[in-house]
Length: 626
Image 1: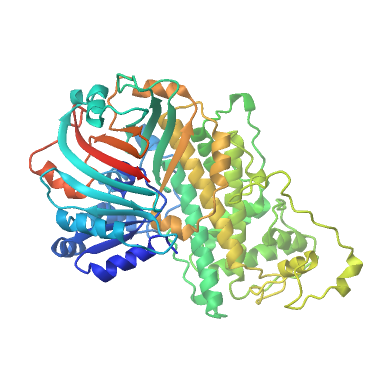
Image 2: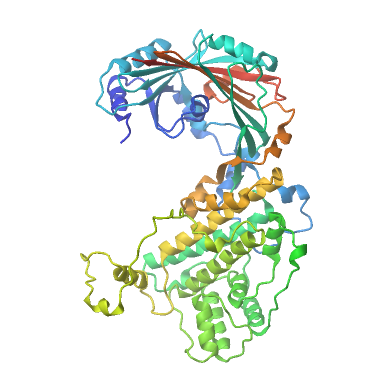
């Protein structure tokens, strides 16, 4: 339960004529105040007419295109077509249309301010009200047109010995030469023990920004603070699966695995023993059974030789590695079979072609014996040695075999990419898990096999190593065959999520290399990113974009912003006295970040995008100590 719940209930009971937002801070509140992870209360008045207009507005062409998650899935063509320009190979993101055009959600445009007198009354009542112990947090109020240009009031409700009030004012459009440390210090006032924090953000392109942060001394005379002592952070955003043309086919294969998994899970949940009605309409280039049979026969009877590459001539840049990963010859039979079987046009064709594989294998006519660790490889090896009768696949078993060889092949693709680019060894990283610190390893005692009959494995028995092993061997999903069906939806979801996380890390690294060409520790970055908690593939599909912030140690990046005017700048000046702390945050941005202030720009106050003028906002915070 949030610490602000009691205040939220108080406002609901006493102020029914206002609207209340109770969640994480809106983008501009986060930017101006620095509050990020904790919940806040925002009091405002919703413009119903604007809300209805917003709800009735049609989707843009870009939104319509991005909403088709799977309809345009195509993984048969080569991403290395000669007609692709170098610009397309570097960056095909459409983030210009969907991101950074507005730093707020559309619904925030319906948030209007309330009367300033009512806002002051609400804050005073909250400050004087006695709430249960543990009640604390930030309350913000949007205000209407005020004579002093105030648009946001704030209050921090804490313990009885500390009280915080704040106010944000919009000063309109100012010229860049009006921004000076002398002017800002004069507005702050001559107070003792002054601390100055300054951050500047430079937008390299629509998807990438660099943040420089410094602590300045009291006698600082300039806002030009970019130097080798700056803390540098890179902010990057990618459109998942579309940030680079080389990544599209890789991401489409993960999409395909996800769809196959869903078809299997749906059939099993519906107890559908007749899977002939399953439509393999994945829209990625279907083939007739005769074409499939011809391709499979060639795979079974032809020997594939590996191409030895001179390591001294290999380009380790990620873009070159991706090209080799996509075009490299596949050695193992089941990897080659995945490339063919994923093109089956129907469930019956898939089942027939797998039966054809088994029949050829049983006659010992194959020369390309598979070495992969999956059930299809096991079947082929056993059949070729005449140790097994030709399996009769039923229910979802053909799709399960297809999913299994696909998961293994795609994981090998990413292992190849990480290894060949010298980023890291993907096999040694537990994707989605933080490594255990030394001294925290679990001490597992070896149990003799002779104890097995004496261990109680009933439902109420305590969990032991033997019980854990037993639970791993038998799963509730294994209902359709002892050898042929071992489908576990949770395990499949986890594997697909790991592939997605490995893919997104690759896209981020590729964009950093292409845009900045930094001597960055990509190994450390990749390991930290891959150890983040897993997110389901469905969640990735919904959010569409992935955002990243990472510290940069290569100070050569300073050369990229030399002589440039920052897109935004925030200067925080803090002074302390015995009973009070004064904080002034001066914020300047080329773009408008507050939707209720956007009308100012429409009325004629237009910012020069070259950096000559800025929107100016001041946020003053006074902390009283008792």
